[in-house]
Image (cartoon, rainbow, N blue to C red; front, side, top):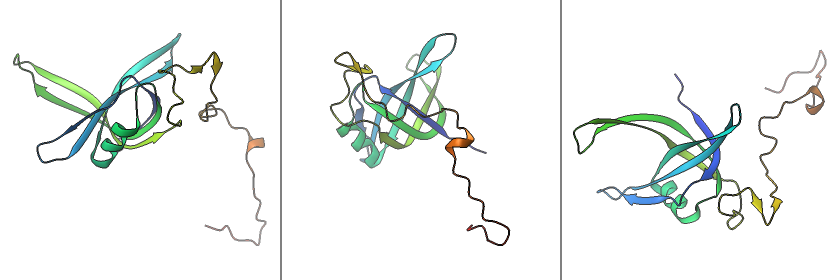
Length: 146
């Protein structure tokens, strides 16, 4: 079985850092992730990170920053104060990559002073052709190195 999630998006607010009663750090934030449907739409996905990663996210991330989150999907339930059972779906982040330098975000906008920013991930998901791949032909007598 497999439960892996990889998301790239922008924080909708600053991370919220808390500590459990035994002192374990936990941070939560929401990631805005665009998707194409009939028009471009945005999903707002809750992210939870733990321990040192939680502290790093709280210290170095802010609203509007572009990040990649890798983790797992978790669905849990709890009983609300009104007695109703509530369900929560969230991503437990196990790796968070900061995709832009601090201070380059302009409040979540993809534009800085009217000019588009260079996006290092703009090739992500593009189709690859055979011309883009270096094909090595070891010949009949050579061994494959793996």
